Length: 292
Image 1 (cartoon, helix red, strand yellow):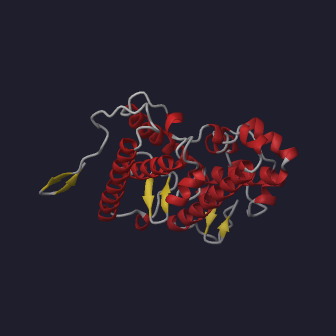
Image 2 (image 1 turned 180 degrees about the horizontal axis):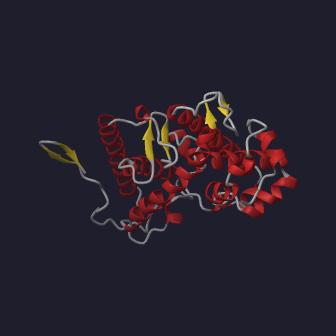
Image 3 (image 1 turned 45 degrees about the vertical axis):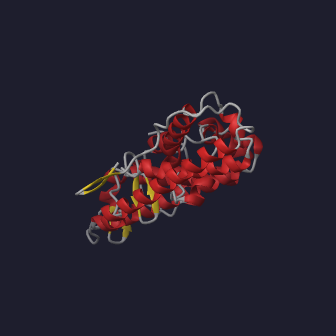
């Protein structure tokens, strides 16, 4: 397996026993799926010589992601004493819940390090311009904006999944406004603030079915097949239903405010041609509960 990060750097960045067989880690799979979609391999290699602190954060994240993905293979080396390379006759294989907790810890550290690296990249105009993550981000709401509204657990992967939803919501909204383009609308700061709030609330509501992400007590997360989440961390059906009602009500409220603002300020938005709204989500009351 290809070694993207040399062994000595791995031991410098990640706490592993010296006798742990680093060949067990499939770095290529980890970096290709969890690092390079956000920071290209070319930029990563360039950072090694020009921005070593950022490089080390990304390298640490990549190794930790690789460890998480390799849990099915390395779990036989996880004992009640930690990570063992050899069966010494005294240790026993760690219980699944201990392995799970170790994996959750690795995953949190991986997301935190990668998110910290993205913060650093964001502060450098040249690095940002050359970065895949920022090039694929949603034009109106950054990951930093979204994190202030609802926790993504510092996951770039969750944010980019949400970008698809946000683009769909924005496109559907613009289709109902006649000939208006986004540039026609976003010159007005108040309108823009309402539009962002509408998109944020509707995005949460539309993602609640959990197709692609899961909702935990700490926020949104990616479900790893290699690392089932503790059942106690999942939000229950009652909480999910209450959240859906809350965010749906808020998105409809902001949608009304946007429409009223357009109608009350036609001189600012000559492109606006009111049409029948087809993009409002309706709540249908039934005896067994609320349905969308």
